[in-house]
Image (tube, rainbow, N blue to C red; front, top):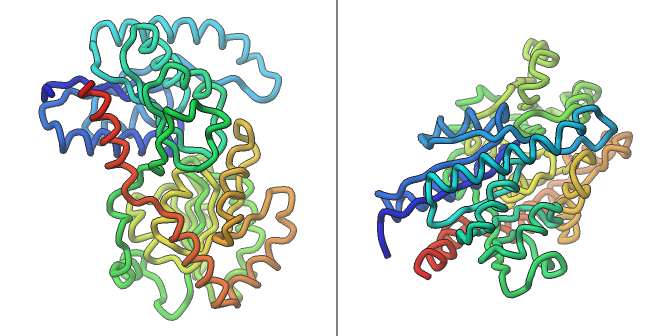
Length: 364
């Protein structure tokens, strides 16, 4: 097979779509050092910053999702969609990719749709246990669909599905010897347990409010807090950096050290986060976002909870937070069971398996 392959990737909006695309590109680059890469994202979304930081070129489409509530912004959606389809068509015509890979997000819909129209092979990497409408439609013409959960035959053609898991950062694959380094890096008290709070790359208002409300209760149980508030909320919560035992960050780049430091984790239930948490194997309390398509975060979390591998609190049940937290933090045996069971769900070779499937398509 030729080494001078051209690979187009599209995915973004959140870290859960961006980082899998970057992981796939990095693995492809190892195998095909002379390959040419191009990303397609959505203007004004985080991929336009994160992808160039990783050394890849990206072009933005003027696309956005439909608002779940009544909004004047929805009136512009058809025009933005048509404009994005035209631009995606132009990108594919000029770049002439050998394959187009979609990892989800606003821009991947128009990009993969136009690739299918032009008979360019496509591969979908579906992170969630409940796929969105766009991927269901795109799946009809995709060559392969790489998934992270079982049971997706009800949404996708069975013969196209490959269960690979979701790509994760390679430095998370073994954090067992990093705890001492992590404690030093974050300036933690080694004699206290550490609660890590994650709300996704942008942050989660309800999680932030819950931690703020219960911070004194948490600290009273000899627990220190590393709190990723998200960049949307850092100005509101950075004042708590002055409280002994609390540190607030907009974003944490050294995720391997963050997970290594954690004794218990509170997290949203995005597919990428769950895949990472399975790899690192720590006790988790999921607080899924209800404000996502098809309520897929709740479905993601339930698939883990069903294996006695995590605890879930829905946003409308957060009044139970104190009881749930103190029960877990006092029960070392339960923590060990959750950690063992969530680790058993890990699929650490996801990136390599996905790229294996891409290679098969390229060879054909």
